[in-house]
Image (cartoon, rainbow, N blue to C red; front, side, top):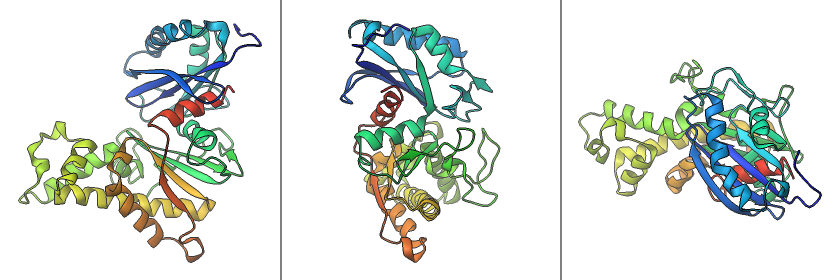
Length: 321
């Protein structure tokens, strides 16, 4: 291990379904350099690690060399804090058990710790973000999938085997939409993710084929949550209906989460939060509507105040600090 008592920097890595973001973090919690690469999980994981090293190594050299680094913290889908493995991640093409922490540690020559990506984001929020000072909160990542981190009594809930807190895979619609990667039907992720918004838009356009919509100006392959948002901003009724539907399902699910853990706050972050009030308003309304009376109007529902992905990078770095 190439560290000295004066080592003061760490590398925080956030592996997402489509992209991997990383940063050099100092002891004050500042990201002093950052970059990203495509995750490309359809290629062998060793190729991914090589690509990661190729990008990060120059940042290491320009920040005092490897002796100035304490280690590497990583967040990844289905990252197991106990084993350092990514295990059966639905949003990655790497199959089975991937010993990612070992591979990265071996390549970089630095101690590497791993946790679930959403748990890393929750740690970032707790130390640096909207949950600073809170001991009871939930973070929900609305990205390619739906991730979550649950904090109770100031501790991340990881459970018996390291996988607790997979709220995105809880069933919210009986016999509902098929999750193509897990085979489950009706889980939150297939509705409240960016991918789910796209699918809802396609379904609504098909169901009401005669109704005018700006969304029809796009080929199906061009439809994304961003294009749905762009159309909603221009007043498109179907686009707004997509967000109302998404927010209703998300809010109902959040009500369930509130009633089992009674958090101070639920913090939303990820690409889908860029939709702002289009997603927040129906989500808040549906959450409050479905809460048992003793929970009503007690839980803050807010967007993260950290830059997108910074929460996960900072939280991953906290694994080392």
